[in-house]
Image 1 (tube, helix red, strand yellow):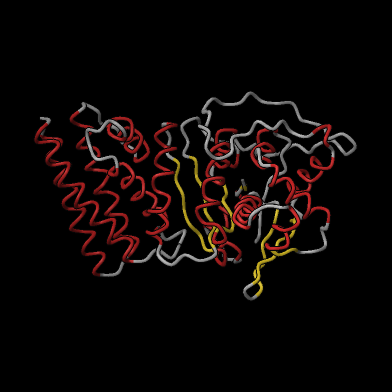
Image 2 (cartoon, chains in turn cyan, blue):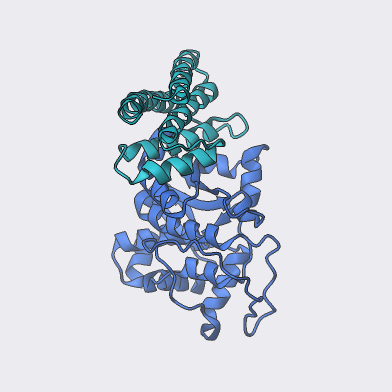
Length: 127
Length: 243
């Protein structure tokens, strides 16, 4: 496992823990943002295995879709979850103020945790 | 439903609205023939000669396209043609068969062609004033994605769907080639936001993969979409292009 992948997974862990705290505080905007950040860092850890290091959210989502969306190397739903997390973050942002409920964000955080476990396995088996 | 549309002489946009469905055309023609009346679903279905399900699906697409508006009154739902500029233009095309758009549009299942369309000279509608130039020129790819999603979401949501719109840079016509395709889905009610994401997840992810772009969506309740609140939602509404 590369040092960068380790750092990204650790960063995702911190984001997930932070998302839980924000959920407890019922801050939907912050919780959705942390859940999305966790998904993005985990996607970057996967891409690191392929020697790719995209930066912006858009580039990460596109690169992850290209490398893993249909390849069968990772469960295809993770790509959907990544895009859904980004859309949930947008919907939860204060300037839009859409009625995003805590349960929907809790689902996104749970998915980030499932994705984290899968990414750890993937990275360990593809050093 | 408040619909904000752009006038367009772009044939692709007309194709998007008209699709291949003769039922859709007949429903629209029926409503146009009686513009001052509103008709309920059963009556439309009976007069057009189709099943309730088909009539409901086609009406949802026409509502999503901004050509028809839906009014609920008690348990009854009525439909009437809208008076938006784009709707007026399409009605004109329907009434002037000689300049009717070709009938080759994708109807929600065909792949989206990611190749940008070359600029077309403005079309002139026979027997009417020259077509107005669309000042924003929404890009062709955005319109094709919008068309495909509107066709897919119509049957999925049926009467819950109040509109599907393109917004952002691709609606304004100032998008870079790799810009996101930004969609707003207006539903009569939203109980749990995550359920709507889940319901549409495969469709949006599939198109994103196919195009190598991000196709994002937000869900807005009809009440919020129609409200006069300021902020980002107001900007989205001002940019919105129906499909």
